[in-house]
Figure (cartoon, helix red, strand yellow):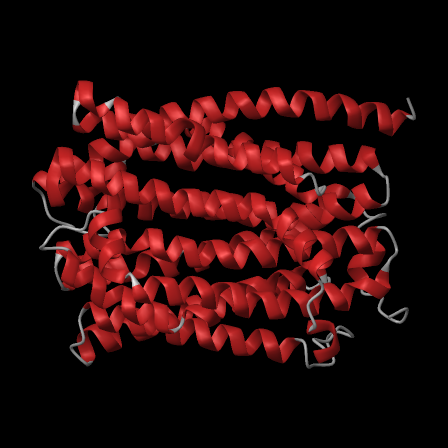
Length: 457
């Protein structure tokens, strides 16, 4: 393994942090923005050309899809963080072993999740998530097809993290763009051309994800990298598998919590506002995904920079990378997540259902309320990712879960009892503020430690 020396391992410890963040984050942000269409393009086509209840059906399916995505993040992000730290420490002999374990686990863990979801699909949609009689047929049709391609949808993104840390962020970006573009092309063909309705949207999604998976495998069997997925490295060892999952537990838990929150949220929306409220919030969350995805791209770009330099004990560079990512994230969410959403929400709602009426009015109100605390969301997301990047799973998990578990769930179960449907909407900004406050408290102590380590104190 001593021959493995990509340009990423050379430059991560020496090149300007500004240049590194630009080179690694911009492709990831572009890729995540395009990749956001995986989540929203189906809703756009279904909402405009099939039935608004189809949007509710996809929204109701999201908690299960979040669980599948969480299983991918548990392994992919955890293994990638450990991969970057080991490179920074100069332990190159371990990187392919980490990759091999990631490949095996990315197949086994999502497969287990998918099997459980298939067996209990009716109970999950009706009892846990609260799909109404009108929405259930759309949700079940869509979700059963998505589950068929679930393993590939987990393995593609999970393995793609290694392409970025291998020093090829643009190739990683292309992987994300490839699947999203294919999905966008196939959607109208299947939905309208073949008259498949919401089933066509689901088939377009899993086919595009399978092609992305094939492309990722091609990369690791090409001349572009010396890294390979080797069978001997896929023989699982308990210690390494647990280490990967411990580091990846924070983003896994956060993503899983988002799925749980979505389920509880959908039940609350149905209780206080009916199917129209579920549809409206399905539209709002589609818009919020486009705002959050660039922040995740920024996280993906800064993670190997922070991880490598932390492993190399270059703590001043770690602090600089975090500070720059934080400033970038905050500027973005203030401009696009707050100002635009408050000023012209109807423009964004119209992409899903360009029709005046109660649904449009309710969606606008929900979007404005939901984005009231957007200016602090960037700080919370970047800070929780920071602890994951340096391998501190406990702090990362605490901050990742704080918004969804510690704050959101209790608030959404109590507040609507007093102010009805608006209470559901106001839960989002209140939880955002509380989670950001907790993140500031936890980060303060770590920041002081880094300062002392950087100065040799």
